[in-house]
Amino acid sequence: MAKLVRQQQVDVLVGFYAFGLQESDDVDLPVPFPDDFDFDAFLSTHPGRLDITSGGHTHTATVSVEVWDGPPPGQDPAGWDEQAEADFVSTSGDVAVWSMHVGRSDDLITLADAGGSWRVRVSCAGRAAAAALSEGEGTGHGVERYLIQFWPAHS
Image (cartoon, rainbow, N blue to C red):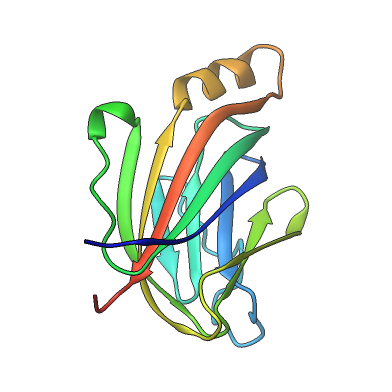
């Protein structure tokens, strides 16, 4: 049974319905954030990058990140509005949070002490509330929640 290795929570500024997670050592990435962002997909990828679309235009989402030593227990789809999985490669073991509004944030997510190949599952709840908020008063905090789970790709 897989064990939870590390857990972290970050507040992410969502802008233009999107945010991203990108390899911290991003100088050699062929497609840096936000180039070629796919706004039609909940989760899309480029080398060293995860692009995530939101239900709301501008708000602060609550993002919980978990790092596991193997595949984590499955999430009940009934508790989430969207779920998707992808592969991710980190050369440094650190991932930076990116916003369409402010670029790279100061938040770093540590996956490991060194680089490696990962599998990631992204789950989201509160998309309709974030969308309604965008159409109404504008911005909000913590209305949309994400759970992002990483585990070694070959486990």
